[in-house]
Image (cartoon, rainbow, N blue to C red; front, side):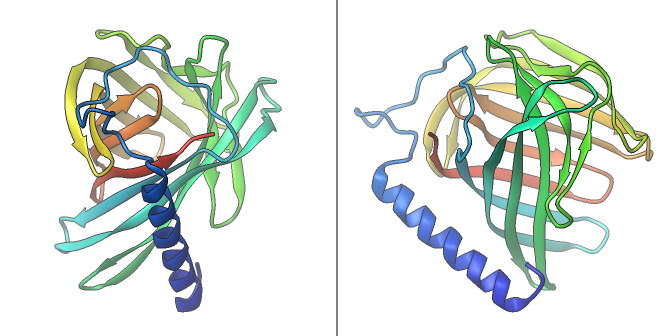
Amino acid sequence: MKNAFSRALLLISLIAMALILSACGGGGVDGDGGIMPISDDIRFYQFGDRIFFYMTKYFPSSGAYFTGNVLWEIFDDNVINPFTGDLCFIYDIRGTLQGGSGVIDIGTGALFAQDGAGSLYTCGKYDPFNDEVIFATEPLKRWIESPVRIGNVEAGTVFYSDGSWEFCTIRVEGAEVVSTGAGRFEAFRISETCNDSFGRARSGTNWFYPPIYYIKSGSTDFESQTTFDMQSYDLR
């Protein structure tokens, strides 16, 4: 996504896939047109899992506001962390946001692992633009326990192979019905606060639906405010 042609091609691909998923019924409304009920058990993720989000990004310092569609996708399910020996997945988030002051190419990602119960662990960081993996070097830190329980708290520091670290506290605050572009879901509301070795802080609220993933979120970091709203999904 380094030029206008690649951005246009990605946008066309995202729109086409969204239309296909919509036609296939990748939404959250059940057969009676109601609310998808909550489930405690986190699904086991697979290569090719995809979620389409509508993303917004606001920069308070400049007043710039950007919106657009992005794709969350697991594109590798067979990566061994050389420091811990864990089998990890890699996901990335890609897309192009448009605003009055131009466009932003979105490219971010991470590595995670799951145990036999489905609990999620931080396994590393991923930079899609440079295809660079940075592994977690300590025994992996759990980020969400399965089955998910209201009141659960995970707190700890993740150390990475490039010498950086991040400390986060993640708390399951409750459960509530949320509306998304893919329908209405009863989901867990999870708060997250983090700070890292670069002196950056971020905080936010995520709505987690265990049979899918995060379906909605809002966060604030050192430079911007960001939201995600699920539009459709395609899970293997």
